Amino acid sequence: MIMEAYSTARIASDEDRQVRIAAAIAAPRGRATRRVLIWGATIVVLLYAAWICELIGPKFFVGLPKLGGALAMMLVPSGFQYLPEFLWALLETVSMAFLGTLLGAVFAIPLAMLCSRITLPVRILQFGFRRFSDSLRSLDHLIWALIFVRAIGLGPLAGILAIALVDLGTLSKLYSEAFDNSSKGPVEGIRASGGSWLDGVRFGILPQVLPNMLSATLYMWESNTRSATILGIVGAGGIGYQLADRLRVYEFGEASLIIILVIGAVALIDALSQFLRRRLIAGRAERDLPEATPLAV
Image 1 (cartoon, rainbow, N blue to C red):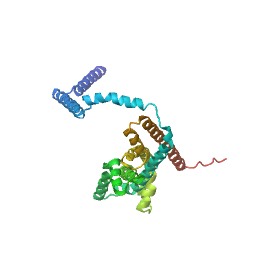
Image 2 (image 1 turned 90 degrees about the vertical axis):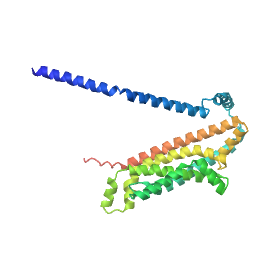
Image 3 (image 1 turned 90 degrees about the horizontal axis):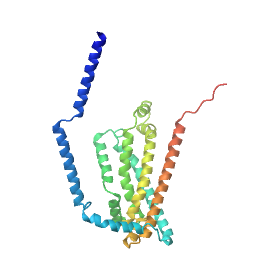
Image 4 (image 1 turned 180 degrees about the horizontal axis):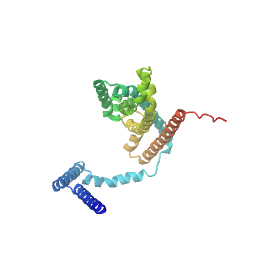
C-alpha cells in the first residue's frame, strides 16, 4: 500500500511538473503576436534607415568596384625613400598618445575620488563631478583637437591636450567604478586604528584597484595611438597628416606603407603593455605573499 501510494504521488508530481513546463514554454497567443509585430517593426525600421543612409542603395554597390581598385593599389607598399620622414612622424604620434594618456591618467585619479561614492559620500557633489566627467568624454578627440588647434595653433601640443581631456573623462569613470567595487573592510580597519581618510585611500583602496587602473591606462595608451593618427589630419601633429596627404593625391602605395607602420606600432605597444601588466601585477602578487619560514630541524 505504501509503495502504491508513493508511486501514485510521484506520477502525479511528474505530470504536474510537465504541465507547468509546457505552460511556461507555450506563450499565450497574444504575447506571441506582439513579439512578431515588434520584431517585424524593428526590421522595417532598420531596413528603412539603411536605405536612407544608402547602405543598401545603388550608391554603395556602385562604389564597391572603386573600393576594390583602391585596395588593390594598396597591396604593394611604395615610397620607401620617405621612410625616415614617416618614422619621425610616427614617433611623434606615439609620443602624443603617451603624453596625453599620462596627463589624463594623473589628473583622473583625484577626479575619480570625487566621483566615487566611497571616497566622496556627499551625493550632490558626487553627481556634479560625475556630470563634469561625462562632459569631458562626450566630445571625440577630433572635436577637442579642432578646438585646441584653433586656440593654440598647429602642432602636437593640440593633440596631446585633446587626448588628455578625453582620457581624463574616460579614466576617471573607470577608476571611480573600480573604487566603488572595492571592499570597505580595509578602509574601515585603517580608520578604526587611527588612520586618516587619506591613509584609508592610500593603504585600503589603492592596493585593491591598482591592477584594474593599470590595465585601463595601458589599454587607453594603445587606443590613443590609433586616435592620434587621425588627429594629424586636422593639424594636430603626427603621422595622420602624412596619411591624409597621400590619400588626397591618390598615392595609395605610400598610404599603404604608412598604415603598415601604424599597425606595427600598435602591435608593439600592445605587446609592451601586456609585458608591463604581467611584470607589475605578478611582482605585486609576489610581494604580497608571506615569506616562507624555515622548518625547524
